[in-house]
Image 1 (cartoon, rainbow, N blue to C red):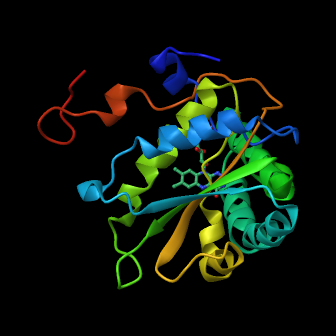
Image 2: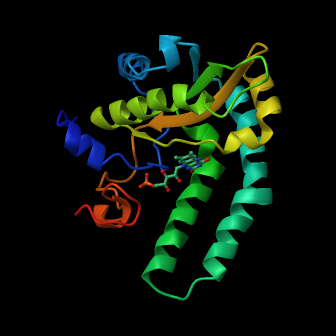
Length: 211
Ligand SMILES: Cc1cc2nc3c(=O)[nH]c(=O)nc-3n(C[C@H](O)[C@H](O)[C@H](O)COP(=O)(O)O)c2cc1C
């Protein structure tokens, strides 16, 4: 349990290895309440959150999530790894790939998922839809971290979005944007690794140093 916002932000990583033990409902409620604090365009709050614990539902979704690993994510990662010279960067990507595969195999074993959904426009969704749901998703990831719980933002299920949304029983016009498997972590939290600010932040015009 941590309360320092900056420590939480700097240590909120994809935690893909989870224990199967259930988490108290009060913790799940805290995470959901944090999600609902996020902004939506025009404060429309056109979102909905499913807490999924039914293993039948989870298994059906996992089968499709696994399929998208076999056809897309797995080969994509592998071709990236194959193109790299041996060394630290390659080892890092291999570890990330192993963790993503582990989560794929054990997706349904997480004790809880939160599925973040949004009512989309009549056209079936526009380019800004994500902007009204991912702030809530990030709030939930931070809240989970603050409570000492592991979670990962996953979107790969959207490869099969129609089938997935049918499994979740979503009404017409509502789509799922992210599945967050949540549970007690098997590993330790640690600092996220990101590029130095000097590489990504510019002054006034792209390419001009700010730092
Ligand atoms: C838009 C988006 C989609 C993602 N989809 C998946 C996913 O389907 N499965 C997964 O295991 N991780 C997914 N991730 C997690 C990222 O791979 C992860 O956050 C990134 O590699 C950085 O790792 P870190 O958070 O541990 O530092 C997704 C992240 C984002 C932002």
